[in-house]
Length: 76
Image 1 (spheres, rainbow, N blue to C red):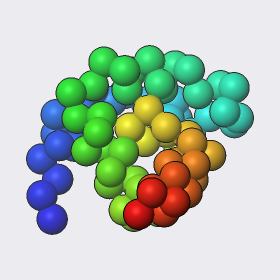
Image 2: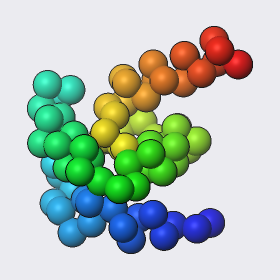
Image 3: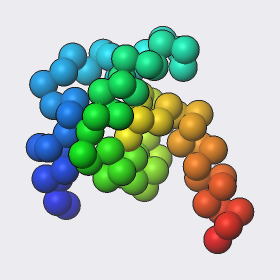
Image 4: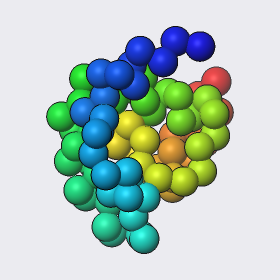
């Protein structure tokens, strides 16, 4: 698996706790980092493909990722 996108991620070297907020309301600091990231889409696709259940991936919370998966199923 090519993980080179991880090496270019804006979150590299950032405290990972930021990406595991207690609630979706606390996700803004992580999302702000994701907003500046060049590999945000690759990160999100990785999380969707691997059904990551926890944390902020590609700027999306677990709830938001579930919504994306549901929308993709409907349009497939």
